[in-house]
Length: 308
Length: 308
Image (cartoon, rainbow over all chains, first blue to last red; front, top):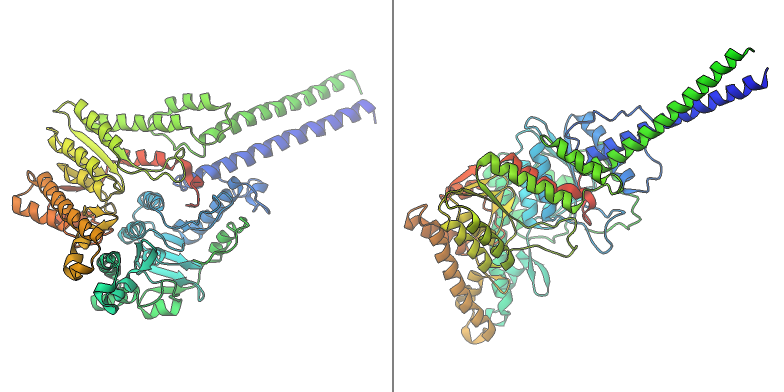
């Protein structure tokens, strides 16, 4: 064999290798961009540009470290759930992330409402929605608006509660046509919390205070707040009754609303699958494995688990 | 091994090398473009040429999110398009955290807002209809009153659009409109004045519930100002409505919204607004929703929030 021939052969191989590496790199970068783009616009355009078989990036990154990688991974799982169930998946997951500002505890805020309402608006009327909720609760009015959006969606809405959906999250679950839970996942009471100068108190407790103590010994502000508390309870009850309309008869809806919103139990009392079923809600046991896989993408924060 | 063969082999190697360099060039080109265009920018329907020019300008900065100038330019463009579409002047009062606002900044109605809006209403020819997009949680009542008056006095038709919510003082602005456009999930709220963060009617009711000698002086003073504020608010609502319905009905609506019959967080939905006799149209133009999408350029970047 001629040394010239050998050199040329080696050169040929090198060039081809460089060429194919470059192509692979292009493909991977393009599909990452596509996924990020889909992430941002909620996959409205579908997954047209995304080829799961194209390159090595379609495998889960073993140790995603950047926000983009985590979001892309998450988006891929969501697309898989959508494909598997033939639904549109919307998530409201309040969990600390790598990029969460320290000292901030994610909870339902009015920004959630805007985002979720925009997403719900874009879902075609005949497409069922899977709503994955994981939240300690938060701003009640914001939760009410999202619950309205769930109730108004003409196709079936399934709320999935893989771990917990307390307070405002429970309110949203009540709006759904079907609630999917595990034996160990919980909802919570939806009784309003009233702000007072020395902290938030359950509306039911403030209403009771006025009954228990001679009125001249109660502070002025507490008496005033008891009025607010009564109105808030009425508001919450009326709203729950409206949410349950069409799912059970009026009398039962009133009883459930009273049970959940009157403040008979602590705001952290777990409403388990069995209790929810006993109340007459349409609860199905079992959550797709893929949903738990989705939650694995939240496990990279190094943040400790926080009690709701 | 003759010379032709060697030349041919060299040619092949050269060609391959060239092709790999071309590939690299393409990669750099595409990756640069996608990084700018993908994560933030929504696909544009009409104005691709303009957007592309902007993108080219941004290419050397590696930032993957559109700048403040780009977002504002996009918004101004959408407002112009909406104006053309509806033949009206579009004014906006949108209180929302922006990517560039401080994390503890909670925008609300302030006097500066009313100055700006009053100027803009004044500059609108009196025969030109006004479309007023409201998105606020309320704020300074006095400032809201000024804006409501300006809108009420405008000769041509005033349409107020509420894509999501217009709470407390924002509702004054809605009441001043000839026509209200809202979505099924949008909400208004009662306009009961708050005295020291307590609803006026609750403050007043303490005078009847507690023996007067046990009420603190401060609370009695607050109750007095609550009475005056509530009266003021009722009269103002009545005046806003008086040319749209008869006096008796206007009084009733004013009483309903100010009288303290509901908690301040009670949602006043489209159906309720219609039932109390307001001229409500369901549906907000698509362009308005596009305008609100420019807010979502930040995606999940906002602290503590994760949306799918």
